[in-house]
Amino acid sequence: MIRRFQNSSENPDDLFQIGCIGLIKAIDNFDTTLQVKFSTYAVPMIIGEIRRYLRDNNSIRVSRSLRDIAYKTIYTRENYMRQHLKEPTIAEIAQEIGIDKEMIVYAMDAIQSPVSLFEPVYSEAGTPCM
Image 1 (cartoon, rainbow, N blue to C red):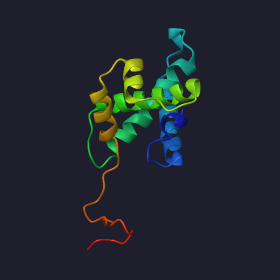
Image 2 (cartoon, one colour; image 1 turned 180 degrees about the vertical axis):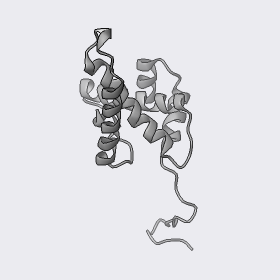
Image 3 (tube, one colour; image 1 turned 90 degrees about the vertical axis):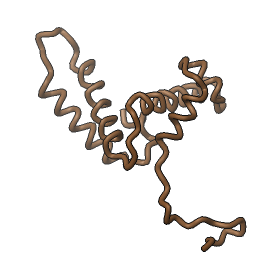
């Protein structure tokens, strides 16, 4: 399940630990009387816990719906690449998931890590500008 989030900037070991918290919550809240497999209940709980962590542990708050679009875009892109052995265009991804191209670009920009204002800017020669 952690592979779904490999494009995030978080350490996979941290995501694994957060997933374990989701697993523990699933164990605590699982109801055996509902005739549902444990994995059917646990997988969404684990993924939800990881998504909650990624959403809440970011320096800039991005809406849940925007993040969901971004993660859906990433997942669709990976599946497209596996099936067609080439990088999909934004239009192809948009058609696949039924969302406007502009919204996909906006969502992908929203999940990028922010850059510090104190980060040096480099010239074409590769030297930092002062």
